[in-house]
Image 1: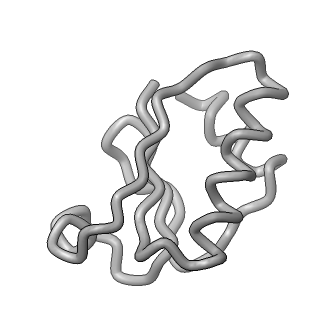
Image 2: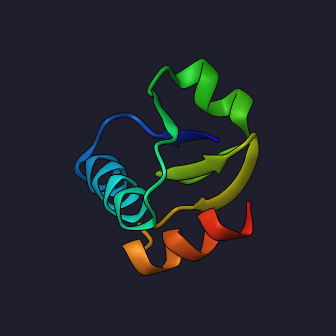
Length: 78
């Protein structure tokens, strides 16, 4: 499972990364987590509002920070 945190590195991006790590730990999975901070790559990814969450090359959340509970549900669907 590959997860990308898309955004310029702001506090919301950091919080999203923490929430993803918490959700993954609670599920007992160890995904590959990558931060995408380059503006050209952010635009290329299709994220119009940051932070964005991409799971296995599919944009699942944009413009907000989901709680670990919601992230767990998204991870379980994959």
